[in-house]
Length: 403
Image (cartoon, rainbow, N blue to C red; front, side):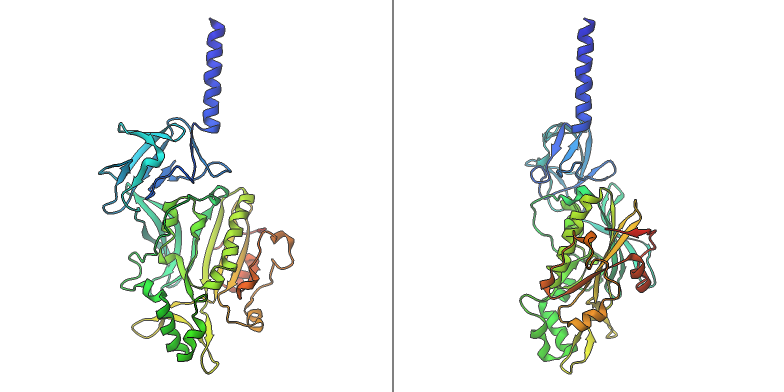
């Protein structure tokens, strides 16, 4: 009898250990999430992959808070609408979950929202002169869950930089769902940003600034100003965080060839590199200066997509896009810069390259392959050389290069 008790104890002990290590619930980002996708919270933060395959593993009875924040947003369970926007479930087994305060039991993918959840911005202080710091995320049960932070000038309609974090396991993303539209929220006043980004407005502004004959030269079917993401959608694993990236505070006018060329190559490379880092990386993505184009008299002028009531330019087309990758554990950093124009010749791009290119002919940066056929020019800087030239970021404690 004693041996039997010991045997049963060992079985229960091993089962408990297996549950803790491997999890008894396994959620796949590809198959096990409902749509419209809610906001998922776990241990006080956004739910995220827990293993190197991009799955989410949970122990028995471990809980997830599911939320549909926003006006007239509600939880849907299977085919049944509810009148609440926050619902807590616990792991039963595999993809089966149970409500902690209700009789509902079902597949995790049956939990969804009646409409996509709504995200918010909240001012949290000053960045530097003329710019305010905002956090962007979701208000759930009177608490703010931040997706990223942005340093923004609402009079100039310019974002200096956006800060977000990327973990190795964040390189996996929830699949499916429609690409959201960008929104203004309440930071842009009466300005309709979608109209300013429209090709017709781009052509109108080019005619006003550079002359009637320049609109068709600069704006074509394959070359126009896109809404260039700063913190990219692909850096966030779940749909709720991805959706929050579609705020105009997280965008800047970026020429399409660069957006789909060097810049896309950089974003992809950083995600791949994050896997190797095995630590949380801090990413600062921003814009600098104003792009100039040649008018009908071969004079270069600044390009803004609109003017204010005093005829001062607003919503500048940036001269540079930059991305700072910072590893706070190793205290290493590197800065990647792309000149936001395909209309500059070699002499001009050489002049605009303001630092010693640390990526060029350096095998330690073999993980980054620029798409040299996109007509733009990109380069890499040490953190020290970058901040000596442009003092736009909070001071980071950097002791070496991020490779």
